[in-house]
Length: 171
Image (cartoon, rainbow, N blue to C red; front, side, top):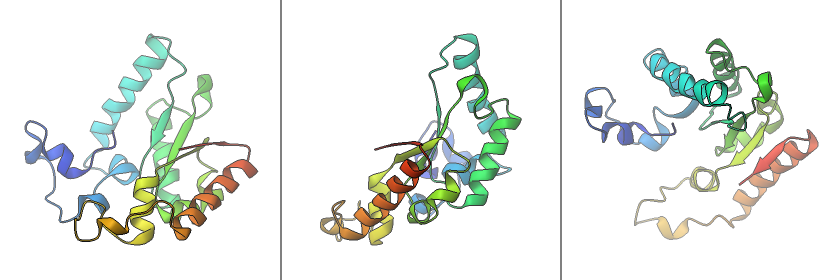
C-alpha cells in the first residue's frame, strides 16, 4: 500500500493505530514504514497477499512497486525484508520496481537501481518536493508545474540512469 498516516487513520479504527502528523506527505509512509518495527507485521500481511497471487493463483506477471524510498539504505532494507518474506527479486521472474518520486531518487538514481529492476516516476510528488510546495495548498498551488526546469532535470537524470543500466522506466 502507499497510504499516508492520515489515509490509514481515515479507515475504520485506523485512528487508534496511526500517528497524528502535521505533514503526512513527508511523514510515516512508503519504504520507511514497511521496514519499521511498528509496521513490520502489517507489511508481512501485504507480502503474504502478493505471494498468494503470484504462487497460488499463478499470476507471476504481478510485480512489486515500492513507494517513497528516501535513502539507499532504505532501498536495501526493504528489498532484504521482501526476501525474508519470501519475495526475492528475480526469483520466479519477480521484479521489484521503485517509485522515483523524491529528488534524492533522481540524484542517486544509479545507486537506487542497484536494488530495483526499474523506476516508475511519480511526477506529482517529485514536483512538489523539487519545488518545495504543498500542491494541496490553495495559497501556492498555482506554482505547481511539472514542466518546471528543475523537475525536468531531475526526471531526465532518473531516466538516463535507468536507460544506462538497461532497466525499466515509466511514468
